[in-house]
Length: 223
Image (cartoon, rainbow, N blue to C red; front, side, top):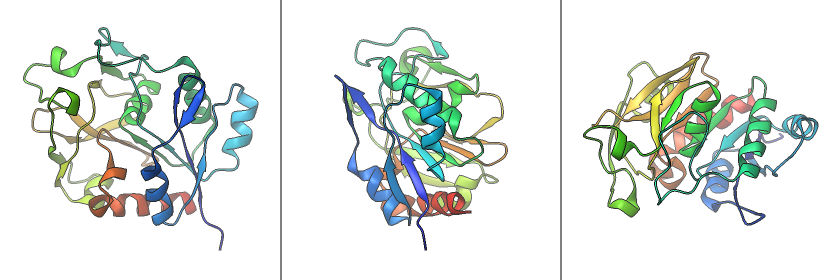
């Protein structure tokens, strides 16, 4: 039986694409066939590549610039325009197929839906936790909405890692916030139709806890 084909976006720096292997492992272990998404430049190429895929993972990355509130801090570089353009093309070409956004990927989905992003949540949102390890942040709890898909897969509470300086300020059209850290920062979103899931943390780095999430995602792509 053919494996569901899951596209995985990559980082981009100095004209080179790179990908943390843990994304690949998480998808393969969940029963999917990982396919690396190239940085494409045309809508025609994006449509053709998307036709090969059953689902898409938008991986972590640098600073989102669309929908930004404020200016990026000195310790967060902006996303390269090449990656921003490539991600936008493949995202738009995925039609009604499932998409999982992780960290930058969640913020990207939100921005595409017209939501806004704090450039530096610690500086802009009162009483925010430190969510970046390079600033001293550590793991913290998250609470998921009881009626969300994420809660059905992971439970209503769990400890998560944290690797972000930006955070969602307002949620985009057709999306809802379904997970929050103790300071109220949004940690998970879902689309109202269930097609899109975004996580602010990195589930591919904690698959002993989050494997059901990837298995469900791959199964939805298969269906």
